[in-house]
Image (cartoon, rainbow, N blue to C red; front, side):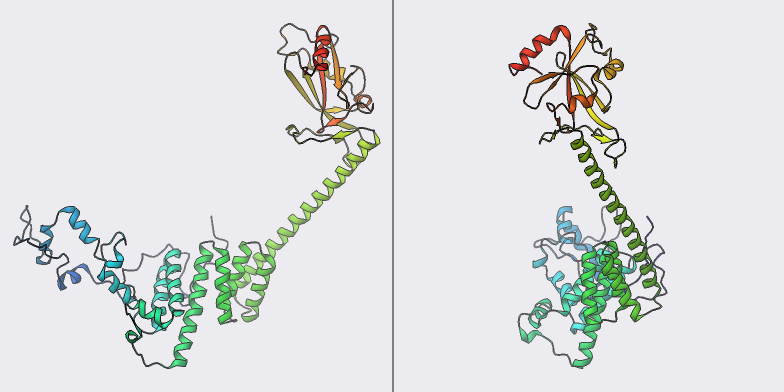
Length: 441
């Protein structure tokens, strides 16, 4: 899916870069302080990567095939495959897990390298590594580096000493700096890290976090146009239109020609118009629904048709009491009617039974019934009964209009439905006795 947002870069990127191009190959491996990772050859030339096992002697210089091995790798021969893998996992370059990281002096030394220098230098290194990750769109990795940059700027002296691997205040190196200049650097790096982390959260669709980062950047510098833009974009994604409008407006007050802010402002206006249109249509539908409901209640009351609802209303899909003209109470009333065949445990639903139609009219086209093998059900050979409000039964004449049955004062519509029991004449007496005894139907 194409992005509906302007592609952008962290604050300190070369603005000539085109983020619409495919991601560039990732940067080469670096140590935590940003310096390039030494090559394998360089690492091997300085010391043996694997220590000599106690009691082991190895003078061989070639393997079983006679191929020569570098002298620095000769000690590898004394290890089994499992031992070799375990030993490699203690070497930072080859590590596959950090289970033993706390007891690994090599790893701890590499970690400490990341915290050399002043706070501004430490945070600046982390920010640069975040920028490298963002340049190739590795947003999660970039965000982690910006996290570290922000955290390092907020560390106490004691926390910084611990990060450097020291144990007390005496371990904190003394660096001669211009305090005012250093504070300015720290503030600039903190602002850029918040702004760039906001970009990562925006790309990762963490819109709430994006807004919080933008707020932090704007508190440091109210004229941070990118923070206003990213905040507007995050608010738009959350459909917080007033907040998005405010952020875009404030950004344009600072830079009225900013193309990204102009684009997001147009999108905000379009989204606002769409939401307002949807809200208006929804309100109109709700108003019409209430009007139709009021009209229907008026029509039922005018016809003297009692109704009742229960907690176990059946699912009738789209069948419902309705008027042919929903806003005219005098128009024809339609009622769902359920024909029950209690002697055979069958039923038929008439979704729209007009008030001026009779039971007989519908029986004429329903019968013969497909399951009636003995042909017991015919329009002339059946009788119909409706349960009354008091729990009794009344006979529903097959030529009687539905409205005459409903406004008799003895019948009610339960859950918007009228139930009519249809039985062959020769089974009526037995069924009525069972009904009276509480076993019928």
